[in-house]
Image (tube, rainbow, N blue to C red; front, side, top):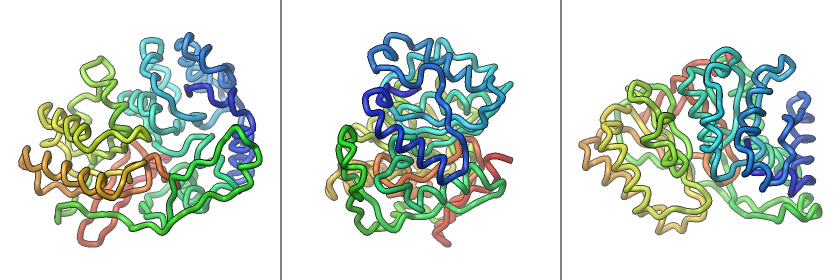
Length: 325
């Protein structure tokens, strides 16, 4: 379901595969078309849907991880059998463009996982970072509720994946400012719904858009991509959610740390979010920003469809039920 980078950068993919197996004690196998060139995958969206069907129906497969993101997974949806997702519910994890597939799982009533793809944080230089490993274990391996944690440090430094030598260099991480509590004082709970805000735009007004009933009382989480959409663009998209009646339905929001933003852009983004919420009389809505599930690293796991709670007084965000029970 990815954009074919595993074929272009086999060394980076191999590191991710090895580190997943070593850290979590699992065996990684590829779907039939996982290691294909990007052009071939682009020309064959049905083959990518077939890969998901193969994984769902294969009894030896317990979980499905996206290799990486992309930009047009929406083209697989006409070929996707949603009944297979319901009949064979399995762990599906990815981020960014994989929001398309995660939303299909959500619509089918199956918990899905917004989390690190194989070639990103799971192939991190010099090993998977403890924050990422702990989050994956809490969400995928431990059948119990858990707290979201704030990473102590973060980075958006990129070291060239086509150069195997760069894999031995640790990226430069800087101290995290922690979460930013933008507004709201009352505790809120609801099911987690959301993903990459640009990718969700691909789904609006299509048969695959999130139905209104799934927004009722939901905690809406969103990230911006590494293309760094302007704060104004994000406000336009959010205003559409308000015009649909979604902002009045939700119980809270979680915002990822924006990638490739200056401090001024980040401040402007948070101001725009508050401004749009005020336009729809949602100054009461609890909103937590600067969280670690976006296009910066490290990336935690957010389980779509699970009930979560935002507690502005205690400064806690918790998943209230096991995603895998």
